[in-house]
Amino acid sequence: MKRIILALLAVFVFSVLAAGNIKVIVLDANDVPIEGALVRIEYKGELTDSSGVAILNGIYETSQVSMRVSKDGYLPYETQFMAKDNMVINVRLYSNTVGYIRGVIYIGDSDHPADKYIIEVYDSKSGEKIDTIVTDEQGRFSYATSVDRKCFLIVRGYEQRFEVTPTVDPIAVGLSLIVAVTPPQTPEPSRALVAGNIEFLPGFLVVRGRMAATADTESSYDARKAIDFWYRDTPTRFQIFSDSLHHSFTLSYNAARPEVVSGIGYVDLTTDDALDTKKAFLVVSVGGPQVNVHTRLLNETLRVRFVPDEASVDRWHILDTQNNYSFTASTMGIITFLPNPAYLDDIVGARVRGGDKRIGTLILAGNAREGTEAAVLKFNEFLHGSAEGAAFLENFDKMLLWLYTGENQQIQQITFVVEYVSPTQARVLGIIVG
Image (tube, rainbow, N blue to C red; front, side, top):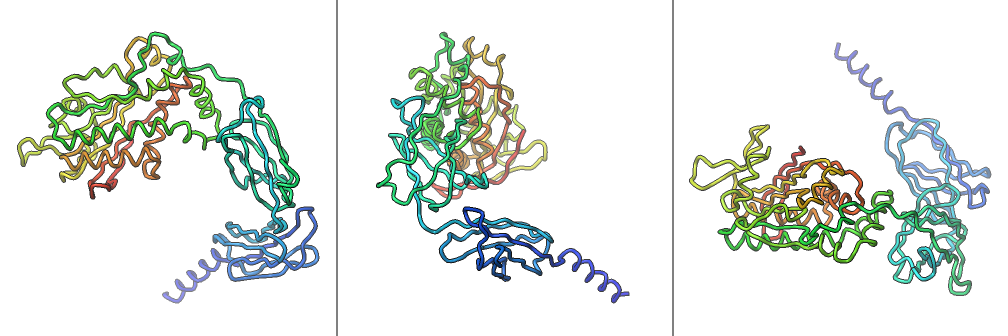
């Protein structure tokens, strides 16, 4: 019986990892076959024939493999793919002689150079995006590639496509491209931004307990600095997105009155005994329920909340009420973002224009001083673009997208449980969405 089972197992493994054949066709920039190019897939290698073809046998199916194609006088080509039997892969090698693309981009006309705009570079033959470059303050750019690799350029956020051919000596021949891109139609700005009766300042309000310790006061200032950075960095951060919504933000942001931009971006500090939650778009509550009355008022509405510690007087610990799981160490804290409401639309806009500006609440609080510090440390990392805070930043950014574009936004409630490690480091223990 054992022999039969082992035999069946051997057949099964062989069938899953069956070896296959892969055909690679190598051409130059003019679609002429390249003879003698070395095609290497993992540990196997073959030279192309006069038709530019190399066939590699014995490549296991369903496995991720690396391929490199090279020949003297050409730039090597490297890629990875899932191997399948009888695959045919077309590869184009370009000359290793360096060519240059240089130009100037204007927005609308020559009086408006494209300052710090992102240009996407594509291969004209394959349509593959190969790189991105950024213009300088005068709208100028320079890019090095193979001299025989024809490309087309697209300024991110605009529709025009510009075909360019690299030249060997950019100084001698001058600029490859001088163009003015046509701005798309400016979207209608958010109704909240054009309403004349809104007091935009402050945009954000950081609240600490009146009787809070010095550490919580310092944490309040650190939270304020983090929000200030996030707001000022938003136009630059949104440039990496090519969709129309983020581009609409840029246009509305640039067209907004200076007092609106500075008012929304102003972060004020206050104490829990002097708080008017309606006066800011976002209210940030720093410190746990023992030291911050505002946190205590919000606490009962939270899924992940603070509960009194039965073992000690005037002590609290974090409880996930849905899973009945406690986080009891004094070094633990929470970052909880509460949209108000979860769906930002014209109804919310009417409330904002009526004087109630609240569209979000943030809680940065801990079981004790170290837990609050951990929450603020991680919050700062999230706003600086850390990978583990991507979901938080995406939801946080939606407030500004709605304010500046007027586009409806669905925002998720999200909580991070964190733990203090050192004065400069904290770690995430868990993420709860909803």
